[in-house]
Length: 209
Ligand SMILES: O=C(O)CCC(=O)C(=O)O
Ligand SMILES: [Fe+2]
Image 1 (cartoon, rainbow, N blue to C red):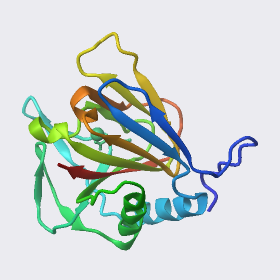
Image 2 (image 1 turned 180 degrees about the horizontal axis):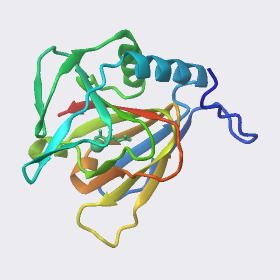
Image 3 (image 1 turned 180 degrees about the vertical axis):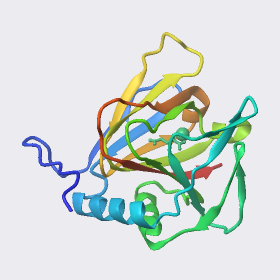
């Protein structure tokens, strides 16, 4: 299925690497990390076969739905406590192992878990946050893979208000690497949009030192 055709006259299907010059962060983008055929196949499979969960967060004593659906995968099959929700941890499947192994050829890290986010339309989003807390935040490798609609991934410094914000469009088949002290010094977000856009799936493979 040619849902997300990249058939622009000037685009190529070659992998394109961009290293961003952000103080106190190590952020690298690989466009076309997965081919169009791979990306279409993985998008369709993940959309259909993932046990998507509607998680809730408690704000002022009220349960509120996350504006997206999620699923956790990892090395162990047990329930995990993540932030203030209780998520089921699923065992890796063939598609996720394929993606994980391809990333691990580029980044020499053994990822131990992965969070899948399903943004059904422009109303789904994730607000400003840093991944992990305390000491864990200081040394992480997060490999973020996108299939489906392109959404802007925004970065802002946690304390230096005068530092320029960054807006990285994450397209179908792209890989964004966030390493070192990135989580410690920078927040990220995927904003809502009122535009009519197709769904997007994002996978964050995670390693914590
Ligand atoms: O969807 C994205 O690009 C980011 C997701 C994210 O930041 C997270 O799950 O922690
Ligand atoms: Fe995040």
